[in-house]
Length: 164
Picture 1 (cartoon, rainbow, N blue to C red):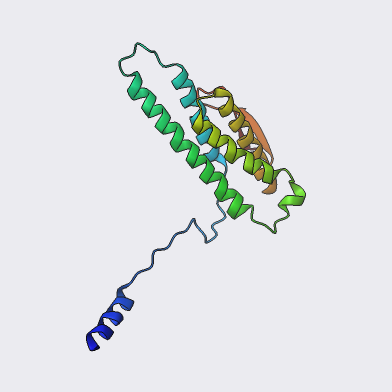
Picture 2: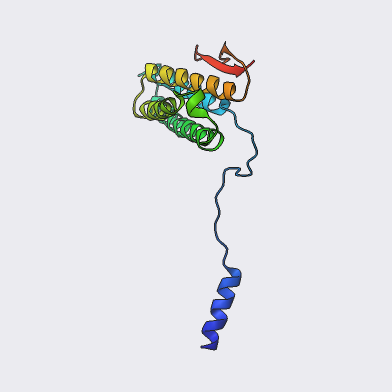
């Protein structure tokens, strides 16, 4: 009995609980820019997949890498959008009144990101970029910043939204 009590005491002293957090300080540093990079990366992977040369002996390796990158950035985009929506755009900030389309846009982005993971459709990636750009414009408006659309400096031939 004494040994059991000692074991319980030692276990209670040495047990460490695992914790998880996303900067729940809150730090106040939120930015949709990483989601935009993810969306452009997805589009670029679509283009690279479409441009694969069937006679290239490395085509299967390239294809696998493009798909893996597309998948990774699709999930990263969804995470980035969820964090902004769940933490920064939390209930009680008047979001629904000022930007009534934001909840639907959030859902649309998650759905579009899933679609880009399921297909190799360039149009699906372009639609995702447009939705993320709209999300970015609303995000910056909530922060009181004007925005501008600029051509992305990437080989995607699509726009990005930046604070002015």
